[in-house]
Image (cartoon, rainbow, N blue to C red; front, side, top):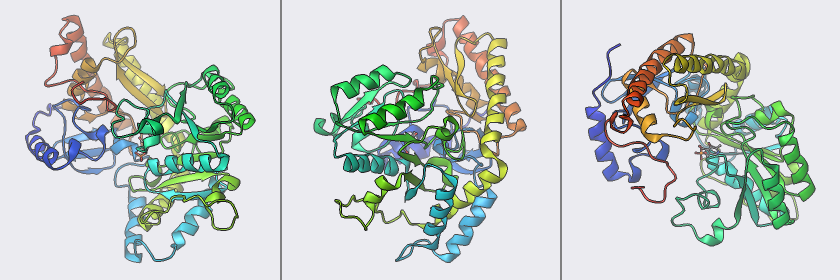
Length: 442
Ligand SMILES: Cc1ncc(COP(=O)(O)O)c(C=O)c1O
């Protein structure tokens, strides 16, 4: 395959975009400092497992936006439902029939959903879950799992990161943290803040397997403490199980949040949970009313139609099983390649088969930004965009073959750089940096 070298038009547009839009993108994870400099900068279109940049380069896309798809870009069944809905109108003066249909479908499909409420982004529903928990318990503290990278753009979460400029300490100090698979850290919190913690929030599974009984212990402790257990299924939902990863482990949260891929690229998120908590946002009780997700676009029908079509298609094709099967081959293939190219201590795969992550590290396992940048520069030059791994129904054996070839080239390159101690000089421009940093130049 011809190496991709020309990013000139994208570079030019990106520079101009940065003059008009702070950060030059609408998600920091898509922006400058997250990719090598020799990478596609501006995308013109995408279809199935592929996308094209403004220079006309074609890439096999494993990023799928920020994991917004489980079926593939521009998936026909979903897009047909959307096109049909456009002709019927996109937002009405009273609730649309789709709000009824989707609510009925979800409360039947998801055992955790006695009631549901819709939003547009994941942050809408995680932030709503936090507010609802505070209202229900009358407590002000919440605790987040510190091993999970992101829960919301809301101040209650961003205030806990190094990028907390603009957020008063009074707000940040109300969010505590605990470690995944670390019951002691949670028990210590409850001992320090007895009957003061409204909710704990975590992804039921991220990269590490839960220790046997861990999730059930969380359930037992939060029930004992009168604390709301929130499982964030925004990434894990659908990939692990259409009912959420927690369903596999048979541990029921009080509230659960879904988003990203549930609408296969359109905008919809869902807060689901127990009726006695959710109905505080309702109009038929005598307690103080919670202002729960009342947004102009929450009832926009396109996202709702897309969600219904996506989930029905996911049920039809048994999406979790498919993703797991492709992921298993991807993970074992990458490990075999790394072994063959003698970089197994430097190019690793972490996480579950259905949600793996390729990481370039030092020998001791710590992340190595320069090696990561060098590796991805070469993988991108060979036509594969895999900043994170969002497997979809459009990724098949053929895409695995293309990916292995590009990864092999990336591994050969870093092997040479490691051998000659030239990692820092082996790529163009600057190394990638963390999204959550206090100063841009760090
Ligand atoms: C686990 C998790 N929760 C919540 C969010 C926030 O979702 P959104 O970006 O749609 O607001 C994200 C986004 O990356 C996420 O990964």
